[in-house]
Image 1 (spheres, one colour):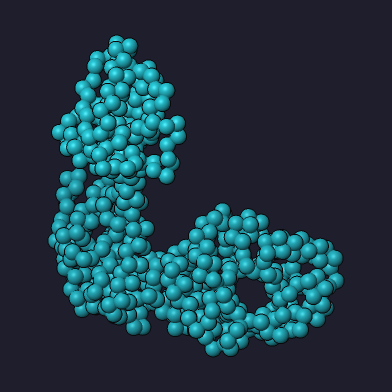
Image 2 (tube, rainbow, N blue to C red):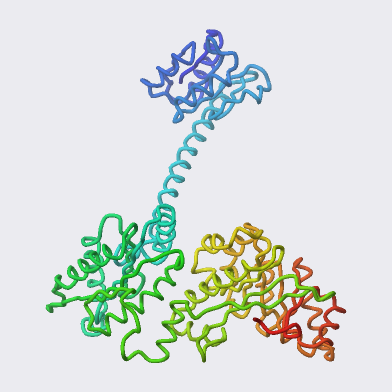
Amino acid sequence: MLLVDRDESTARFVRGLFDDASAGSGASSWEFHVCSDVHQAREALAVSAVDLALVGSPTGEEHRGQAASELATSAPERTVLALHAGPDPDDSAAPLGTVGWLPLQGLTGPLLRRLLDAALERRSLQDELALVRNQLRVAHAQLAKFAQIDPLTGLLNRRGLQQVLSRVLLWARHDETSTAALLVDLDDFRNVNESLGHGVGDVLLRETAQVLRDSLRSGDYAARIGGDEFLVLMPRTDAREARSVAERTRLCLSKSPLSLEGRTVHATASIGLTEISDATPSVDELLARMRMVVRDGKLSGKNRVAAETDRTEGPRDESERERFLAAFRNGATLRAVKQGIHTLADETVAGYEFLSRADCPPFSMPQDFFRLCFENNLLTLVDHQCFRRGLEAASALAPGMHCHINLFPSTMIDVPVGHLIDSLPTDRAPEQYCIEISEQQIIGDPSYLSEPVAAFKKHGVKIAIDDVGFGRSCLESLARLEPDVVKIDRKCVNGLAGDDASKRFLERLLAVAHALGSEVVAEGIETRDDLAALVEMGVEYGQGFLWGRPA
């Protein structure tokens, strides 16, 4: 026990109570030290195994609380109590970091014993809690690391690579430097799995990962993105240097035969090479481009490096369908058209929705070319290109006009939302942009869209749920995402004027939208009768062929 007090009578009083408490309980006596000031107490704590420190009125200290706080700060692992003679201590002088106050008035030996036992127990529990919290921090750090690491190879996984890709593109934009990427695809890996088993295939994948570590430079990032594909990001690297690294990697792989299950396996890889930019800020978009480059290398004989810049007309046996895919991958065939969104009361134009078209028959309409892209893993890449085309076209609008741009839910997840927000031109207020999400494309629980939707809204951009009433509507999507705009599908609008059942259905949809505080836009208006019915029902905005086709 350490007592810090300049008044000897206080020390004798506390010592007597403590001795009485120890004697009455049959416990062994405790060693008792007395110091007159905090400086002496600090020195005593440094050389003695003190369990408790009681702070009275040290020399030179006006408040016990201040002295106790100073002592507790210098020895945070010790239990420090501040003594006070009155019934109520000054709360404003309560010592920071101490266990609490110990009243002298009415204090008895047994009561002192209980108070000190409670103080020591509390300190023990605090220490255990601190230990558990530290263990949890370590565990959380490990889980965060594991969430970004492929458990088989120890390389980055897709999630970890996406974070790195976002950082690398930011550095490239800031430094105005080039960034290259390699897609390493093992040749005939399926044959290894089928002839020697998946266990041998796993060994080959681990060995490939080690070759990548040994052959790449210290500033490069390697990831396994699934199956036998590995993606490498090379910051501050131009195409010439990237090709040199790619060739070195290819040679290292082909010159490292593996003895597996009594058989020698010669692993080779086809490697695709490209330079990357903000045009492909997501891993999925990057893969969509690079897989076609790797495919060219495999068609040309495997075990070779193929660069995206090597592709001109494509392989001689490339089919018409493949040429269409190449056109969509490059984005050159895509363009944006616009359709007016009208204020129904006076039919003035309040804004425009920008839609996508492709100069590539028979895939000119979005329902056709998006289906083709979906079947060939190009959906995010092409949808992101359509998004940018829409923004480019919107820049020509007069100030004050609202711009509606469409995005697939998958694109909002695959492409970092910060990049999408940064793509918005700054010559127009954020609230003049509206991102339309088709409810037909929302799969399952819509909560996976909550984060990107919240990010857009925080920036001031509006969110619209499109195609509401198409026939697959989910109330949860509206309630969860809380859109600023609800767009009623043309199925609910066509023939509305002469269909009482359609009017009742629309009234229910309008009630939901109004409960959410959302504006309503009716799509597919083609007749004056339907327009009049919508105005009568209180729908404020609409669009459709009544005012012309998209152009």
